[in-house]
Amino acid sequence: MTAIVRSRTAHAVIDSALGGCAEYRAFRNGLMSRADYSRWVEAHFDELSELGLNRDKQNLSTRFPSDDHACVTDLLAALAKDGLVPGTEYPVDAFEEFAQRVAEEWDHGGRTTFIFSEEARLMFALAHQVRPRNAVFLGSYYGYWAIWALPAIAATGGHLTLVDVDGDVMALAERNIAALGYANLVDFVVADAAEYARTMNDVDLCVLDAEGPLDAPDPDLRDKAIYYPHTRAISHALPAGALLVAHNVLLDNLTENAYFAGRIAGNKAQFAKWKGHLDAFYDVHQVFSTTEGVGVYRRNSSPCAG
Image (tube, rainbow, N blue to C red; front, side):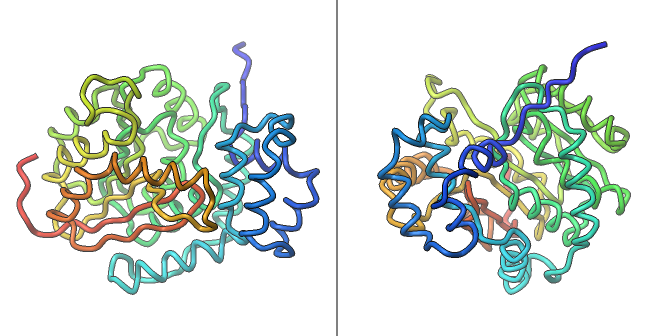
């Protein structure tokens, strides 16, 4: 029998490591401001490194929302105001039950996902609002963000396609999704996401979380700059009103944090071409201050060749 290597999410790793720190507990309980906590983190790099947290994980903790449900409800309200979703309701009890099941059964295969708890909840809630019939995750990794959309997709009789160039992570996604009972709703595609996207049609929800190699010869394929060719390839398949959702759209500095100032500058440079495409083919842009940042965009009626 193959041993299950569950590992944990980055959120669980950070929360566990910092649980013994009074400052972290005070921040999470609303007794310390985000700005004060952020300054404390920046001043205690060596101490927090000894807990097994690199600078990225240390600083990501400063972006945790105080309440995941309230955070998601606020995000849905902003989307509803712009007409991207009908409202703010989602089955909260069903989410809690499903989250418990995923926590107990999902095998991370020794890998780590940087989908944070409020981002998982957002995908669950957003899918229940959008009720997609044909969804695709480009750069799906091992399917952890996608699993949160599947209860709603199952309820509507919809279909999901996962696309990733890495066969190992796709095999892990398939095992986990099959174990949770959703494999019959999913196509598991090992392919270049941009090339595969050109073959698709009538996609009402596209989720981006791809990441190119940092040393790719083509700058459009490095790190998150890869969102531009991926979106350019899939936009033809999204009819007017369809939604594009992207992870790692971290463009705001909540506390004048020096670490994030550098990350944001890099993100803006990487997203320059992608932003031009979004401006041309998506008529509503919403970027939310989740832990890693999530962008939601609505496709306009302009034709796009792909």
